[in-house]
Length: 388
Ligand code: PLP
Image 1 (cartoon, rainbow, N blue to C red):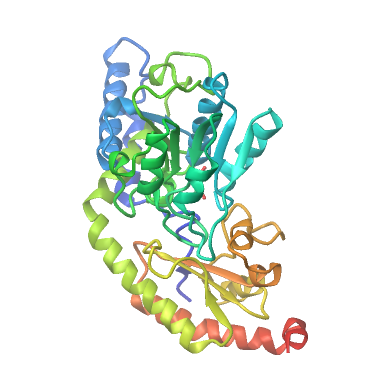
Image 2: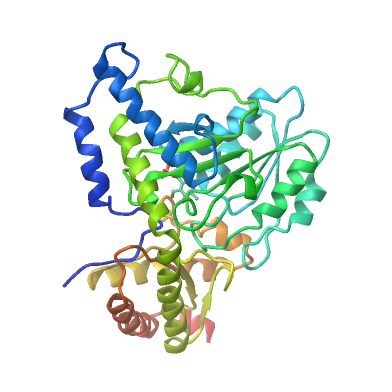
C-alpha cells in the first residue's frame, strides 16, 4: 500500500533540488571558509549567497541572519542571549504557555537562573490577547517571546499587534517562526519583531539547520564561543552543505508560497469538513480561520490519540498525536491543556499536517480509513462506557 505521509509539521522530506544543491559541497567545494586560499573563499561566498536568500524571504538584511543548528538552537540563542545581555536592565520575560518545548524549557532554565517568566493565558483557540501582553509588562521586562504559529494546533498569533506593543514599551520581541517561514508570508518589519527563529527541515530543507534573525542593534550574548564565524555571534566551522540547503529550500519556498498555501488550505478544509461530517463527538482544535494552511488537529472523544496513530500506521498513513518531540511521552499536550481541554480530550487528539506531496486522493483515503478506525476503537473503549 502506498504510504500517505501526513506529518509535515514534524519534518518534511528533503526536496530533490535541495539535495542536488547540497551534494556539491560535500566533495567539490569543501574548503573551510575561514582560510585564505580560493577554495576557502569560494565556500565563504556560498555562505553569503545563502544568507541573502534567507534574508530576502523574511524582509531582513543579510547581516541580520545567523545560521544555527536548527529551530531549537535559534530559540535558545534568542532567549538566553537576550536574557544574559540585558540582565542589568531587568529579569522579566513574557511568553505563552503554548510555545514549543525549545522556548518553554529555555524559559524554565532561565527561571532556575533567577529570571522571572510570565506565561500569558490563551483562549480556547490558543490565541494570545495582545491586551494581556500589555498588562504583563513591568519595568523589569526585557523580552517578549510569542510564537508566530503553533506547531500543534496551527493557530496563527496576532504578532503584528504584539510587535507594536513591544516597540512602544522598548522591549525586545522574539517570535518562533519555525512553522511559518516558507509556508505563509513572513516579514520581520511588518511583524515588528527583533528576533525570529526558523528551521530548514520544516520547508523541505535538511535537518539540523536553521537560522536566527537578529535586528541590527539588538543586544544579545553568544551561546557558542570560539572562532570568529558568523560575526562572532556563533563560533564553529560552518555547515556549508546545510547552509546551502537552507538557502535553496527558502528560495524554492518563496517561488511557491502563495499558490501552495491556497492548495493546502483547500485540502485542509476538505479534511476537516469530512471528518466533522463522518465522526460523532469530534472537535477541531485551534482557530477555524487564523490557522496554518496545512494543519488539522482534532480531538476525538472516547479514543486515545496513540491508538488512532498506530491504527492509521497499519494502513500506511502517518499522523501524530501532537508535536513530534512529545509524541513519545504519555503526558497530555501542554498546548491542548492550555486551551482548556481536559486531559482525556487532550489524550484523544490527532494531528494531520499536509504538505507539498499531499493529494486529494490521499485525503479521500484518510476520510475512508479514520471513521472506520474510530468506530472500531470505540467499540472496544472503556472510555466510551465510562462517558455514556
Ligand atoms: N519551534 C517549533 C514551533 C517547532 O515546530 C520546532 C520543531 O518541531 C522547533 C521549534 C524546533 O526546531 P528544530 O527541529 O529545527 O530544532
